Image (cartoon, rainbow, N blue to C red; front, top):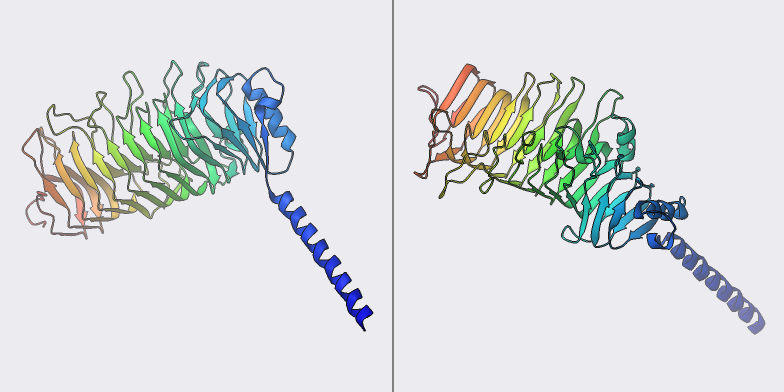
Length: 421
């Protein structure tokens, strides 16, 4: 009996040791490899990063680059790989897009004060980081891409109004977080590409980013669903000689594009110290005629269109501006808009819900602080207008065209025409 027990104990011990060994093997297999780009040969840091990427094969892993350097070779990061850029300035001179991210790839810095990726100095190249498929054909789909904790800084001698420094196109489950877009010479960050192949950006976010002196649109969406722009800060939009800057631009370009379930929340636009005339604060438009519109939520944003102290300025024209032949289903609530050269809020469309917004020193100089054109089936309630007594301002609400089936009440300071409360 004792021999049987001993034998069983021996078998049990072997089983436990085997199970432990298998668990350790699985653990080793799940730990991502990390390879140093500096260990590989290549004429520049871009070539060395690509060699490190190839060494990882299909397995997940990290490519570590240190100290910055010149990028003369386009970088391509494979799916499942993370390019980790440690402190330094990475300076492309490529005519091609400097960094391409395949589906499932990421580029991560050491913080936006430490990791700086410049625009290429090559003529006409304004894209710094792009989704791989989007770069090869506008409209193709990408997915699961992350760009985090770095600065993208302008360096190109020219200007443009269309390319984007961070260009993700029709990307699903993609994130741009804690990125500083600094003085880039065209659009800052954009989600959405062409809809011709049946794709759009989906379930993607731009959060906790800083935009300073961006020459064209700072943050743009052209074709997307379930998109969030949240907790971003925009300072001094535009540059002298640039193409003009609307700060947050929701703008479908085609009748098949979409702008559905979009949230723009808790962002700050601050043009108080700007010296270059810019465009508008937040624009929502459907001029392309797409019917794939709404719902859209504009909530908790703070907009300073200029300074209302000391030297009075009107840098931004309109604070919140929604228009287009199919514009509908937009909720605008709990926003604060101060010092705009034209309207604090300008709306054209149907089924707006406008609640509890605060406007200070908007309009003036013969221009109304509020403009409503062909607005119907909407609710405008609990909004307020304040005048500090400095600089021009006008609380008048100008109504153009039909104004049907709207609920308007409790909007102190807003000067609606007689008979509309």
